[in-house]
Image (cartoon, rainbow, N blue to C red; front, side, top):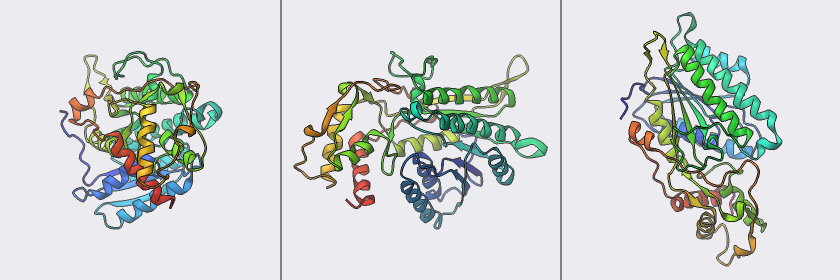
Length: 363
């Protein structure tokens, strides 16, 4: 186990993408923990890549919890691609910990809308790194730990499973994957040059209540409710390491408190205080089995009627460009260093999503 070397109590934490799926859940978790007293600063550009009302709902949930919390909450609407804004936030609030979860998500969307990936995932992340670098100029304190979202997509079409952080990841199959690999390389360079402790987290197929509508479980539900067919790629011969959002957040929280140690190498120069971890459930589910569980839980939650003909609404189709046949996380490093392994089973997670969906959309 790594020692806890970054305390959360009485710290200022900047969370980008704070109205996003993982970001909002992280904020809620930190605000709900009254054993810590933190100042949370959230940033999100509230873009319309998906239904903004879901982001607004998340922010309302945060505000409700914040009113009873021993920690404080400040929300700033803006983009991490806005260099002046990011510098202003760093110079105003002097965060001790930065958690960068802001990014343009989605593999397929990156094929048709490339510009936004360069703007958010590359320029935006560069702005975060630069702000961390200058956070201790002019005698100001430095950022203790930068934690940022990478993705399982960096493994590309790796044949070896489960995916290990020791594997080479030089063959991305989508622009999205390439930008996430670029984040890791940039973070490594800044860790080496400026001694900034940074940890990248490769998330595996995150799902749960109030998730992203572009994810399969959410999109399938929308289509089934409209009586449309759902397309199951690679003729159902795909496996995904579905990871429940609460497990992701618990992993992020633990990692925040365990920054890579700053130390000097034999050459007299800093050894990069840099780390990468997978956060996944380590139990890949076949897409057809996943659809079966989803259908059963949608019926149970009364989102769909008991006599719904699911077979008539399934269509098996070829693999999509940018997709991979399997994702499967080796989380042994996360378990070794933080004593944590995601454990929420798929049915439990899908059940919570179905119940949220019924309530949110008043089905």
